[in-house]
Structures are given as structure tokens and as C-alpha cells.
Image 1: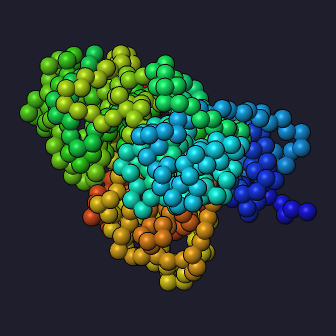
Image 2: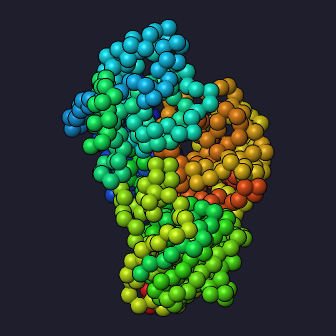
Length: 232
Length: 313
């Protein structure tokens, strides 16, 4: 029996649920289904943000109608029945293919990762593009996916001095994680390739290409294909 | 109707009340840092309180109005001169076509707001007109204003009369801000727990719209904590390993992995937004029930003000 899960306050305009202690599969499934049930469940909710072990509900206290108790209590009471609801809607499992060019100036740290891991560059590419990843969280930058599934042999520490400018689409390794920079920004991850896909585009809704729970595969493309796809 | 930027000022951006519904996509909230001042300034020109306006930082811009307009300044005082004549904050003023508004250095705070009847009519991006500097979208071309920029202003909402905010309603900027305990406050060592709600901190020069770094009273955990990232909010006080707390502000990242030791109450976020590098700040503990009571009371006050201003139309 799990202990009952309760909303805890996160300041005066958010509530947070902790659904496990470790970023494991069962916790992740609870986070995803709980976030799906809470999204739009009350007029005071502004947004629901899933993370590794938590679901956070951002809300507007003035939209919680209650005269007898403070908004945080009234909202938590209204939402608590939804925490464990076995009749949740089936979660959509999308698989997204991400083309990546692992060549030349698009992969400035590939040799560094090879040196650190004791592999050759082709082995690094084969291991990175041969695995299946799951988006565990979106954060840091608009549309930035934190991915689970990196082969532990590829783990490489971040750069001691972050770059001041990492191009949008850059695919990097930071410690035991891999991710994709959705917008041009500073960044400290080791860059091993670049995708021509727009991971984030504010002109569309949603702006982010990926969502928590998506399954992801990288496949290697040539520089010619990269340039052709970027030009579109 | 358009306005022309003659001189940009230090960091002048288009903001509204923020982009709150895409945080699950990692999109920062953005919006006016002192949203209370921005809402009041909008009410003075007859706008909806979430209309887009200009946020000025430390040194203001110089602007030319190509058509007549109704404007109001709020927040810190930037020593505004309208065609050379002083223009005080917190009341609306008619500006004739061809007029120049010059804003100087801020006093009594860090950020000012220039509201224009009709609002700044940049496109809505993901539900907001706020500038997202980190990802370069929203506002005017996703960036701070530069000399030569021309901004569109929407049609004024009806006939606008002169309105002034009573002096008793001018926001006071607190140096002791009401603050809630955070989920990780008990992970602090005993001395640090005392310092959190007692010491005076100094706002570091490395402070911006993403967050304020506080120096002068280092805090420490009982033991180093490894944490998984989770959602954070504007006002969240994080403790990075260096021991100098950070108050997350409007452009904060949506998730964070540092221990969360406190949250500034929403009613006092405007006071934090008005602090300048070198200013001091202390936290005074407030309960969540009390913080929300204050919040609702202030919202009711604004609603009453909105009613009285529309009756005065």
C-alpha cells in the first residue's frame, strides 16, 4: 500500500503532488496519467506541469470560489479525487523520429565524447542513434526534452565552461542524459550532432514538437540531407 | 497609431501579464515584473488590465508619438518630460501628435510602466504579447527595443478622461517582503534557518528578469542534497550549492533542481521587482492562509478601483 498522496503548497499560486521518490517507470506512469487528469479539471488552473516525480498545478487563487476556506485548501479538496482515478483516459503513446546529422561542424564535441568514452566516433553515433528514448520532462528552455534511455557507455560530463551560443537543433550529451537544444541559447552539453527539425516554434500551438511521454528515435542523416531539410 | 523609439533606454520591453499556460512546454511565464504597477497603469488609461505596455528598466527610453494618445506612467519614477514639461506617474495624460516623451533615470525603484490607451498591438504569441528574451519571441520581434523601432498602438477603448490614482493607492515598495516557507526549508542547517528569516541580503549585480541573486548571508544545507528537477514559480527562492539564494522572477525557467527554501508571497513580488542591484532585502515569514487572504483582499481592492474608474469615465 502506498501512503496517500496529498497536494502540498508551492508558494501561494501552485500546488504540487509528489508521486514517488525515484524517477522510475511506475512513478513516471503515475505522473503522466495524473497530469492528464488534472489538466483543465478546474477553472482556476492555469497549467499543469509534469516532472520526474511530481505534478505541479499552477493556479489563480482569485478564481477558486470559496468563502469558507482559503483557496489552496478548496482547490486541493476539489482535485484530490482525481489523484487516483483508475478510469483515466488512455495515454497517447507517440513515436517521433528525429533525423540527426552527426558530422563536421554540426558535431563539434563528437571526438571529445569518443575520447572520454573510449569509443570511436562511429560507435558513438551507432549507440546514440540505436537506442529508444522517452521524454521524461520538458524544461530549461521552451521545448527542451529531458530524455531517458541514453546508453550508459556514452555518459560524458558537461563542459567546464558552457558555450555562450549553442545553435537551435543541437543534440547534446550532459552527464547521463541526452537532449536537444530547441532554441539558440547558452549551453554546457557536449554537442554531437544537429537536427533540422524545429523542436520549438512559437508560431504554432503547441510550440513544442515533443511532449512528456513521447518515444523518440534518432537516425543519422548526411550533411546533404541536413541542408536540404533545413532549407524547407 | 504608432510610436517611434528615439532612444531605447537600458532594457525596454513590451510586456503584458505573462504567458502562463505553456509552462508544461518549458515556456517561461514572462510578463511585467511588477505586474501590480502594470495593471494600475493600464486602468488609468481605460485599458483592460492585461493590455500590453512598455516596461522600462533603470534608464528609460525617449519616444515620439505620431498621433495623439492617452498615456499613464506607473512604477518607479523615471523623471518623465513631455515636450520638456514634467509628467508625474500615476495619472493619465493626453499627448498630442508629434509630442516627445523623454524618460530618464529611475528613482524610487527599478522598473516603470508606460501604458497607452489601446495597448501596444504586437501579435499575440502563445496567448500573450510579452517578450520572451530567452527564446527571442513575443513582444516586439522577441527582443528589447532599439532606437528606430516603431510600435503599433491599438484603438483607444472609448473616450478617455483624465484619471489619477489617489496617493493612498500608490504602491509602497517593501524592503522586508512577506515570504512563505519552502518545501526544503528543513534541509537548512539551524543557523541558516535563522538567517533566512532574519538576515539582510543584498541584491547582486548578477540579477535580471530571470532571477535575483542575493548575497551577504550565505545559507547552507545540513547535508548536500541531490534533487530531481521539478516545476518552480515566480517568487520561488532556490538555494544553489554556492549558498547565495536566488529569487526566481518573471522570466524564470519552468523547472529547477536546486532546493526550494522559500517563496515570496505574490503580493510582495512587485516590491522585489523594484529592487536594484545593491539594495537590501529581508524575508519575514507569512503563513499560506494569510498570504492568500492578502492576495484576495488586494484583488477586491483592484476590482473596486476598476468600478470607480469606469464610473468616472
